[in-house]
Image 1 (tube, helix red, strand yellow):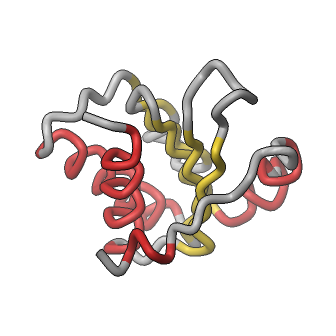
Image 2 (cartoon, helix red, strand yellow; image 1 turned 135 degrees about the vertical axis):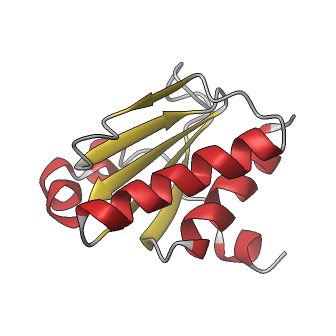
Length: 118
């Protein structure tokens, strides 16, 4: 499965659970970890878990291999590794603290609004 399909699946799943401030960073040529980072947040631990669970479930339904899911029990920063795409689902407070968007400021953002309307 190509990376754009994985990204679209993750974006739609996060949006379905009302994730806030969903952004995708194009990491090609910047990071060896993944082609895209999806970053979003929820306002409480239950919502953070629901977002992460939905991303994982929708990915698996399409046959996308979820290589790793970390931080689920604490629900402060959940990482979902889907190979080409790594989703970072934060609790709002943690997102502000870690500010991955600034850390990876040289990575261009993807137009994911078009992904939600497909």
